[in-house]
Image 1 (tube, rainbow, N blue to C red):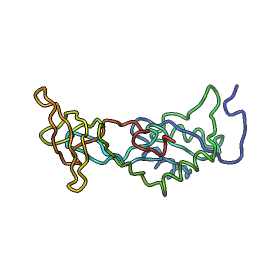
Image 2 (cartoon, rainbow, N blue to C red):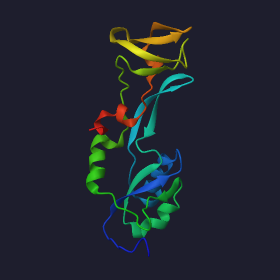
Image 3 (cartoon, one colour):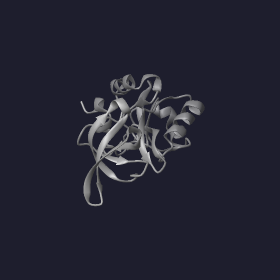
Image 4 (cartoon, rainbow, N blue to C red):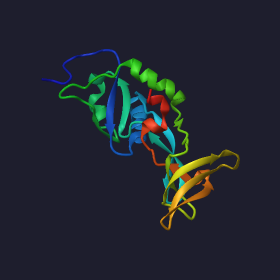
Length: 187
């Protein structure tokens, strides 16, 4: 059985798997070399690092991009594009993605700009302290102090729970699941 047995003549959306951290490379190559329409939804997220909290841009779907083409005409070129690992398939079939699904996603990502994800903290949220004297420690939010751009957290210091005020930019939510960070996708 041939996975290209169903011939189509109109472009459709397909999902391509990329090599880890190569989504932007594959996207650029597909656009430049094959002149294909590619959609790579990205998020701007705050992450804790050894240097403190930093804003990074990450793909919404790590290792996946969406490509619009007539698959029978471009399958070999896509598979051999820099950064592409394979096309997503189920058995011998390369499934199409409905235009409506991609259009709905594109509404959330205007002009392919990364969606900024605000790291909202609420009392009781678990956080990680990213820099300062308490770097690397886990804590729980007691209250936000927006006027001073600080947050009061409860740290375990020498075996005792101790309330401490830290700069808001030095804590990052321990909830890194997409559904917690982007409420629009939870609906």
